[in-house]
Amino acid sequence: LDPHSKTRILSGGDDCKFKLWDMRSFQAPMATCNKFDAGVTSSQWHPHQEHIFAVGSYDETVSLWDDRNLKTEVLRSNTGGGVWRVKWCSVSNYDYLLTANMQGGSSLFKFSSELSSNDSTLFNFNIIGNINRSSGTSQQLIYGACFLRNLKVDEDLQDFWIATSSFYENQFDIWGIRL
Image (cartoon, rainbow, N blue to C red; front, side):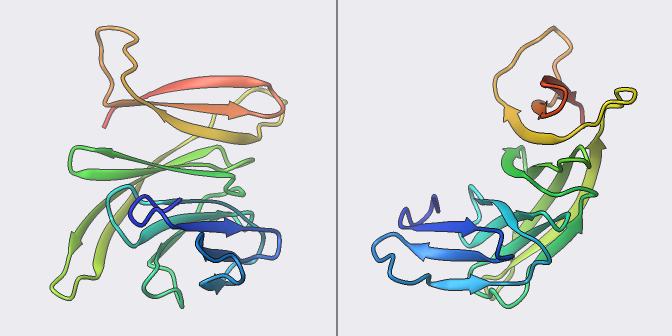
């Protein structure tokens, strides 16, 4: 659900497309984008930038889009695994995007953005790192990733905490992130 309009949603599927819908009329999507090499698995609107959303795909990419121009993505990055989940979080003056990359572990991206004079958003982007736990010979498949708010584990406070879950290992991990 678009937190800014409250009437639009994104959907994705195995047809390698995402669709933008207006919930007041489901007869046809407002827009369709087919710029992916595999199924679209996850999407989430940016919590503060009105026109921006992230999309994850089985094609091992996460991309950032501006709904005012769906002909091409604003940014695209390879994650090393099919992106099953995308989650936004804002800390200080930066926005972070966490991805669950199936066989590629998890990735944490840092964004800073500014509005230019023509009201289009310019993003500076860098990857902070990948979270990949080695577990011997067992196969890891990360399907879940989320930010944990207000978690206090000890006196050594981290900048924030995230959680990941692995399918094959039936394991839930909590990670302290220090920036």
